[in-house]
Length: 398
Ligand SMILES: Nc1nc2c(ncn2[C@@H]2O[C@H](COP(=O)(O)OP(=O)(O)OP(=O)(O)O)[C@@H](O)[C@H]2O)c(=O)[nH]1
Image 1: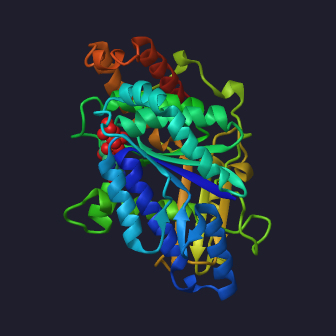
Image 2 (image 1 turned 120 degrees about the vertical axis):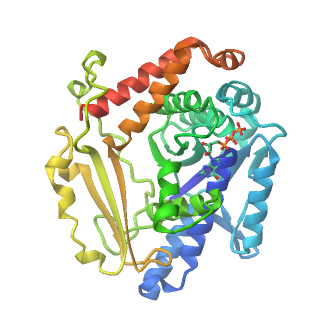
């Protein structure tokens, strides 16, 4: 089954390029420490997921590139073409002349409706190229204007037009300090809108990845390119094929692997009044965890610790809350690798902080006119605060 990736804004396009590059170079890496037959099955499965028919022997990414200014898209297209390994489709881009100036409202209420038809048409054509379509992977930041505002608009449209297909958004959490003043407004608007229209948000914090580059990789002058390569390796090792649970010979067909039928019991959602925002989270309770193991010794790796019921909320049994995906095929240059994808309380504090900072600014009405000017009213902000405070409360009470 195939995934169509939608890359939005500067951040989405720069990361999207690194992800496809990482997927393809992993797929081409020599043998991956497994049998030739297994390697071939892995490569075929990767290709079906992320690349369409070759043009002169060069795979074409199943991707749509969207930005409101041409610079980053042009750079992205030429980097892919220069790789000689893969490229983007000729008609897969949509760009305009002027960005959103970090204004979420401009991306969502102006660029969105104005370019809806053209963008949705390009996406539809990409979906039609898939023999078997699994869903969308939408890459964007949450703090800018285009990726976040237009990204939320496009995700909502995808939900309306492809309600049965999975929509997973890869969201970049902004640096805590030193970026644009309205980043907290943009962030709460993005998150609250995606909360309604997306099936899953995969979050990465720029601060956390920056720390990996500085402390683990010892990089002195850290650029977005360094950060994006770390991200691409993490995402690649989540999305590259793994065996299905039933069989250790066949690769899973559904690459996004989300069970959309899990719901918390109604009693599990606390009323707002019970909310304990300042409650210390001594322990990181999870709703679900997925461990992905690749390479040498995967069959003997011990993951028993992840099955401890104490790690999970009481309404989901560990047997349903914990999954392991495996393949002996090594990822990239790593002899062994392990990735944890966790739906847990980990982001409660950063989320609470962003909501708090945005609320403080909102209370003094700072910069609100920049949003109301483009149709995002105070009411919309209040709705966003309410829905995110409910999310924080629900996670606090897991
Ligand atoms: N990890 C990572 N973060 C990025 C990158 N580029 C921008 N960001 C982050 O994204 C946020 C800004 O969003 P952008 O994607 O630059 O903005 P945009 O969507 O193009 O919107 P406009 O510039 O308003 O048109 C900030 O939090 C940046 O730290 C990137 O290549 N990698």
